[in-house]
Length: 360
Image (cartoon, rainbow, N blue to C red; front, side, top):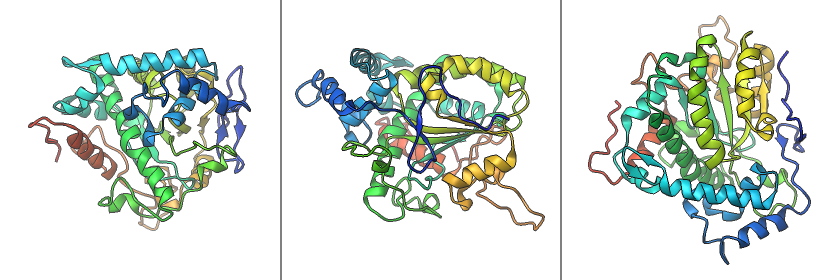
C-alpha cells in the first residue's frame, strides 16, 4: 500500500499540531538566519523584487529560499540571486524578462496546448486550513502532445502559473484569513469559487511564534486515474516544469496528494522521484485505495468541495461532489471557473491591444 508519507533520506519532517500536514523542521535560530539573508539584499531588502514575493512579504520569501537550501545562508543567497537573474533574462518569443512577458500579448496557443497535456485548474477551492487548492488530472491529458510541443510552451505556462499563484491566488488566501469571514474567492465577483468555504485557521498555528508566517503555499491534488506507461512521454514536460518551479518558485506547496495511483505507479515514481528534492518528497502522500483517499481528502476539504471524480457515488442519480473541476483535453474549450479567472488575470496583466482571451 502506497498511502504513506515519502520521507527523504536525510530529513524527517514533523506533523503540524493538527497532524494534517508535515512541517519542515525549522532550526531554532531560523528568524536570525532570515535576517542575515535579508541584510545581504540591502538595508530594507530592496534588492528582492516585490513582484516575486507573495503578499509583498520579502522575509517570508527569504524563508522559503532558506528551506529550499536547508537553511544554508550562502546557498540560499545564490539561489535567490540566480532566480532574480532568471526573472530578468528568461525569454519567450523574443520577449525578455518576466515583467515584459506578462505585459506582452498572451500566448494563448501555449496555454491551450498546456491545458490539453495537463488538465487542471489553478484554483479549485480552499482547504479547511485556508490553503488554496490546485487540482490536476494527469491521466486525462493528451500525452501525445508532450514531446511535440516546444519547450518554450512549458516554460511560458510555468511562468504564468507561478506568477498567478504568487500575485493573485496566495494574496487572496491571506486576505481571506485577515478578513475573518468566508470569501473572497479569486475576487469579489467569483461567487462560484466562494461556495461552501470554511474559515481558515491561522497559519501561525503551524510554527509557533512565527512573526512572518503567511498563506504562501498551496495544496496540490494530482489524480492519476487512467494514466498508463505512455505517461512517460510527459516525463520531459515534468522535467521542464519542475526545473522552472523548483529553482524559481520554491516551497510554494504545502502538501501534494496523489490519488488513484495505478499498479504501475511504482515504476513511474522511480522515474520521477530522483527529480524531486527530499523535502518535496516529504510533502507527497500517495493513495491507491479510493476509500482511504476519500477519507484523507475529507480531512482537508468540506465534502461539497471534493471533486465528483474523487467522491463515492450512489445509485440515487444525484451526483455527489463538485463537478467540472478541471479542463478537459477532449473538450479544450471547456474552462472551469478557476481557469476563467486565471485568463482574466492574464488579460489584466497584459498591455497589448490583442490580449483578449480567444476561449469561449
